[in-house]
Length: 314
Length: 281
Image (cartoon, rainbow over the protein chains, first blue to last red):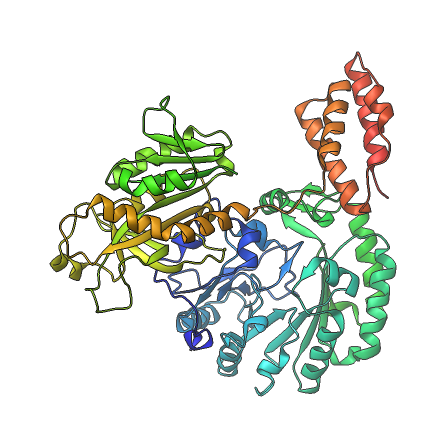
């Protein structure tokens, strides 16, 4: 099926995807300009425990997985550039193994009174890739059979039409990352602009999907108050907050090792050359800046949401 | 950017040497030909010899870390003559190299459009007869590429390692005449040249926001203020931040270039002053 989508593609067989994906001295940005698609079979690690750098909305059985590695977009601030040695996209084709592992995870979860909360589109953007490999469709169909599973599909894509024919489910949260237009234009190469994402969100709301809005990462660019303030105004002029399940906020943060690798590669973007400090193993803004930004955004969002609907990375 | 070439036989190398007007440099332990940034090593036959010569060549070139390296030569093809579409004289960019002895595979990273079609190749340790082809993957067959690639990839990134092969036979002849080899490579030279040029022109980096002038200023100030290596690195970072964020030139820093310091405290004082001048609220 994937091969049919690319009839002119040159196909090269490899024994193990890691021999190409994980080799040293690859040039991430060059590969971004000429991405290869690697179809692979994942052998293990179908579930990972959720990270402290992500919000879990007080759901303790918090996990994520990686049906795909890498993303079609190329955001300046993206941690994938520092985490993966290659920009090529790896798509794992053995979804049935993911489903088995998830079912096991559901059965063995530590807090049985809560669902297994699984984020499936962290190190990638599955919706952006849906027309090539319909991962979202497969997972949405799977979730329909799993009453104790809650899945989040995070995206910047405007390609909601790719799943529009599917029945919405209260156990599938569609989570859109939204950025002000100025940020999107300068720092989110390839990602659809603000209005197109809003248009996709509005359709998804119309169709009954639980929607999460993610304002993450928030960047301390000059005039950030005005830029983000106007973005919130415009967003909630077009989207009724009552139709939104919850929102998340997070300032820029990145594991130090990823940040250092990324900074070496990307000396062309001011985003990485800001006054970051190290807290534990994370690079982020100094606490006074972080607090100012978080508090400003929290106050903006409190006009539209209850406190418990606002997830904040502290 | 240095352009390095490894070629097994003199008969294969001779047209390339003529094309790029290379001259032998007898100061090396191996046959090496060069002119300006173009280098060519004749490696001898076999993957071990190819690996040794490749490593030797790279290690002896200044700015080797910026080089692009090519293995160029003839290769057989597993399909019998007339069976497939591949003909004698066809030239290919190799996208997968299989090493028969170990079963390992190596893949150059190809970003660039070239006039060459792509194909895969198996490196064997002994010349094959046609009846041996059943055990090989369909494609080209040579005796050097796997050794070349493994050696080159110890030094260079996979997108700057390239293998170009010209089909010389369908594994149906015992011995290939030197003149015939010569002719095959000569006929493929135009495409080889264009491919080399394409790789040469491909740049790894976006233009740096720091100009030569900026770097010179940084150097002078570092000297005047007697900055440690760490502080110099901080200064480079701060200058880069300033230029990326403002999109403009640096402020006038001549006072720092003209300052001399005689104590560590003075150095720290002026360094902090400099950072404040370069900071953006």
